[in-house]
Image 1 (tube, one colour):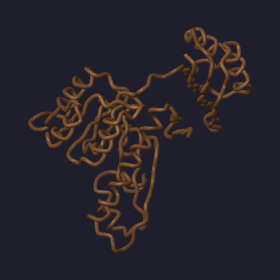
Image 2 (tube, rainbow, N blue to C red):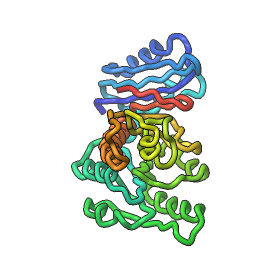
Image 3 (tube, helix red, strand yellow):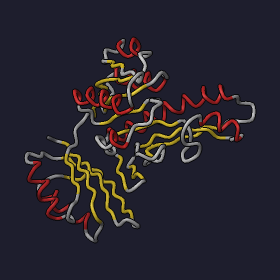
Length: 279
């Protein structure tokens, strides 16, 4: 292996970079790029290293790095790539369409393994890209039964991440516990403004001059998880709600795509309810 990526997250202390560099040198690994950050308030250290050189024994490298790092350090060497994505949808197609078209042309960082919808509306569209589609209805069943059926499908694929591509349902804490920090949502507002339902309508009523979109990790608290990517565009008093929606959909696609790239390239770390993004 001629390229090695190493992800480190641990308690901060003096000399961490020097200790890591010394271990890597002993394995004849040359650090070509390194991004590091210290969350001073939490006293946490984050680093992403890209190294050249042949690595024949990743397990021993892992053990040697952990020996030099603080106790309970998280060290990942060459995380899996591409990342498997399962996409959950309702009826809106713009974000799913962007994901599937990039997947069709073999975007190297991700691979869509399945799409699950609580309506059958997007089946033909999805299967046109040779991606399996599963319809799990919410009719005549409890939320628990719905989520159990979705979970059974996901268990067949073991995805790295779930993407809520305009999936208009709130997932339970019990379901989310199966995928800690692995569920990504696109919300059609510049959070924390207008969390929850109907953000374009509420933005219109408030007379805002900016609208935007936010891609974030999903937590049990609605639209309050760690933010990965955001973007805004200018609007004015002439915009109707429908025009806001149309303009916002383009931003949603851009923001979600950027977030998925960052996560797939292992450039995102989580610190509490914030993210550290190494671009």
